[in-house]
Image: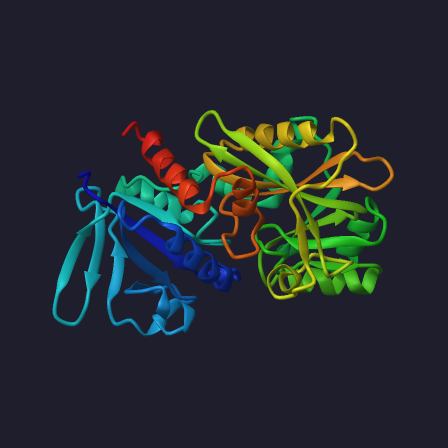
Length: 355
């Protein structure tokens, strides 16, 4: 019998998407084939403590943070594992591969991926570069600008400019018409995102966004359908079909609307004009390759009202795996259930290292 692989599954994290990660990881672990994998659950608290967690039950009842065992991923490549520390002992547990079910800052932005690289442990998902530039919406836009794919017009505001709020407002108004969307450049799940219809709301939105990141993206409003496409693969990625988001919040697909409003729906078989589906899928793969993506990403678009023009919105390198997340649903609709999807992602982690 083939020896089981030890998979360190990381969740939680120091980002504003901590709770989303905790929801995602329960679904990931439940779908993992226990005949193939020994699962080492490691929870990261909001203040950055790494803890060994002995079951998903403790994630469900929110008691996992009470663990008394530290779980430290050693950057020493000769360790190739997790150092588990309690009051009496230190144990080095060998790890074959890491699955970082982490969303947002310090999980999806290249920082923890750099630690994996130092430790020389294969890991699921995008590498340092792709994670960093995809997490940062401004730099994603700079890359996509080179592809000739349309995206919303935008203005960048840095935290150092906010001392003169009037100048910031004028900078935006010189380029964009109201209403505009105000977004932290490096936050996900719509955390810190607001819609502004006048100067006062814009100023308030800038103050909210800077709570999440020092760089702020202000975008024109695109009126249209919200479309998501799942990309999977290593150096020869493929795209799923696409899904449409039917948000309960007509102004903004907010964090609350995404995860807690039962009126928000997804349509896995939206109807488009001829050629649009192929364009969406092709653009998703082109963008994934342009940012040096690997493993998985969800690429989000708008289909503009009246024109039916495809407009790129953003790319997520570790999309959600919650019960309502689009990424796994799109692959399940293609006949790839969560268990097979996880197997593929873990296999790709080894393929990147030629293993």
